[in-house]
Image (cartoon, rainbow, N blue to C red):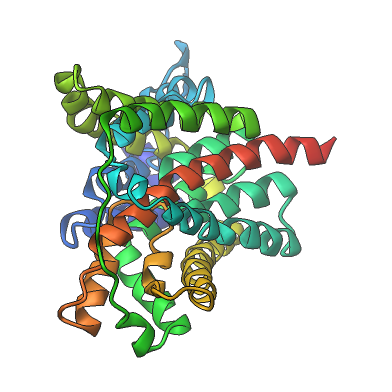
Length: 379
């Protein structure tokens, strides 16, 4: 009888709190359809790992010895050993991205760079709040608005807060349709949001599309070698898409690979959501800092566009600058919607897409810069 009640008597309030967190993530995934492919397994995994003596975690059984738990094993092999899962996900993401709008208007690359300001601003704030430089850097990368990059950077830097960082990154990515309009309205006027932009796309040759991922990989690798795994896998995925001779593989990468890795990644990340490590004041601070990072990124992109408008005849709608964050394609859809709300004839989608994919490139390069820079500063 004691065996049957042992689990119930060992439950702590922190574990119950994590069940509530897991249930909330499941609710957002199902009822609100916010990043369901990731929040659903992450939420269910949070429940699994917070059951006393859970069989999904490594444990020592009396009379048997050490027993390997599946979620701990997935974490050790898929993330801790080689960052395999986040990197494989980049292949699928790269295969999904059409760089055409960016290549037809290369100046949009500037917005991808400008909208990474939130990363470095948040690193500074987190350091001032008492986090170590490695933890602060891992927290700041939440501002990349790119879940796999956040996971990879926090793991490479051996941050103590991988779980909270992953939850913050993916939760705020799911909430981009709420966060970005708020941030944009802080720093733009109604007149700004009504600015119309002509879309006259230049023809992009097949050779340009083929060379682009190779050239970007070489440049990023030479400038920020630590970013090469991030940028390289992203660009390899895009090369599969653009080469034209691997259509079935491209479709597999975009659909089957992305879905499978996202599913496993959500479950795997829950290994770092154990109550004793997750239910802390630091977790609350990380959630606040992650929100600030997203807001800073959005505002920086919009203000940079307003700065450029001081010198341009054909004005740029500042909201396009805000699309320079990496939350692709959600951010570009938000900008299109806001443009139409300001002016029913104001179609900004293709401009926003160009800025959005530039943000995808900039975010992985920023992640590589953080990985390369932080250890050097600690020497």
